[in-house]
Length: 56
Image 1 (tube, rainbow, N blue to C red):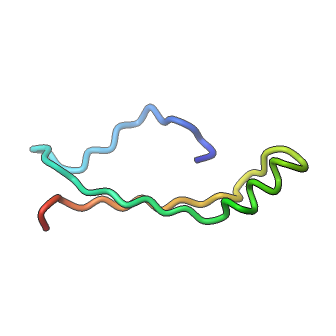
Image 2 (image 1 turned 180 degrees about the horizontal axis):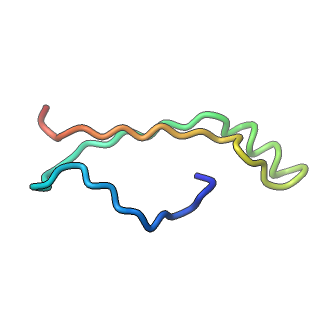
Image 3 (image 1 turned 180 degrees about the vertical axis):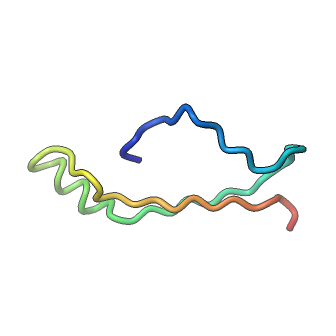
């Protein structure tokens, strides 16, 4: 993620509980090629983070 760690907290549910998480990334090969040649590219890698309650 281009922003690094965020100080904001995301509340998934008031009572808490267990969650499953899936993270997908696109653009990694392009970002690696840029870092080998020119440095770090901006907006090359894209992430999708999905949460859902465990057991559902």
